[in-house]
Length: 67
Image (tube, rainbow, N blue to C red):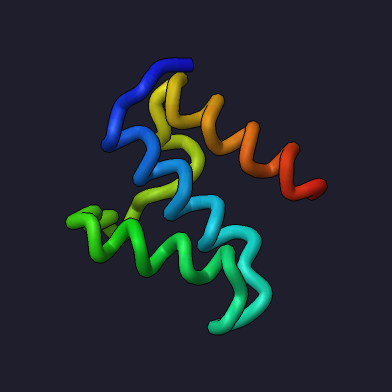
């Protein structure tokens, strides 16, 4: 895993989208922060569109959250 801003935004956005528990959850806030940073996912954005690095970041987020 290495630092890549785009990979981080992709992973956090998708994690927030997949695991939020409502508008006021911290996972939902991840999506807003990614959008504020300029991330604009397309309509087909999903797990399959993540790079290997972004997928590793996403998997770590899921593991740390206990899902």
